[in-house]
Length: 202
Ligand code: HEM
Image (cartoon, rainbow, N blue to C red; front, side, top):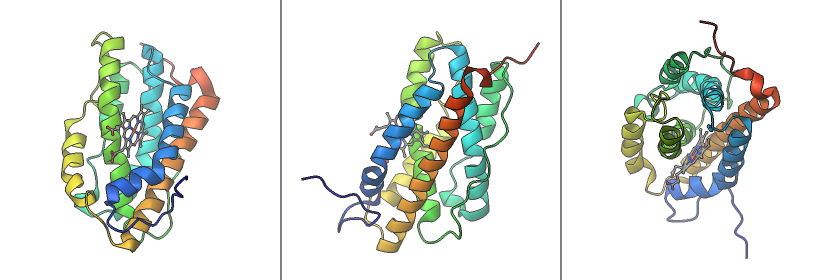
């Protein structure tokens, strides 16, 4: 029998397990959308991938800076992405439109932090592929960010245990909102197509 996914955690379930289950379908959709929008098979694809990441993350980092306590604000990564883009000779894109989830309640910052910090796991896997495909010549300040991984390791203690119901619900809603935001940016990127990452004339 299929298990219904709700924003409420099952009794005794760790917050991490709950968040992963609740957003698994959204993560799969996003992974697929990002492969469609850019992927990272060529240098231009990789530049488009970084552009999407920058556009999507900029308003999320602003939200965290305004609403999250220091221990729930992952180290900003847009500066690292910009550095990679500049090294590739590509322009740094404008941020995606404002991200908002209304008045932040319990768990909101934690859910946001989980999505952004957890994405470092995927980035690690992508970094290996990028190193192989680019023959080690493509810049990976963002994908190989040790700061993100260190933040993730610290956050684990906070999420690998059950959370209060209100916190779990707030974290789930925030995490879903972040995935939806990223998906919107990826889908827009796919519509704009290959023309979005043009080399800056030397
Ligand atoms: C671009 C395509 C992406 C690929 C190929 C990818 C791949 C992965 C992989 C391999 C994992 C690790 C699974 C594991 O070790 O258990 C993972 C986990 C995760 N990724 Fe992604 N990912 C992608 C995009 C994203 C994006 C854009 C975000 C959010 C901004 C994201 C958020 C997460 C989260 C929250 C986790 C789970 C953390 C946890 O285990 O608690 N991913 N991803």
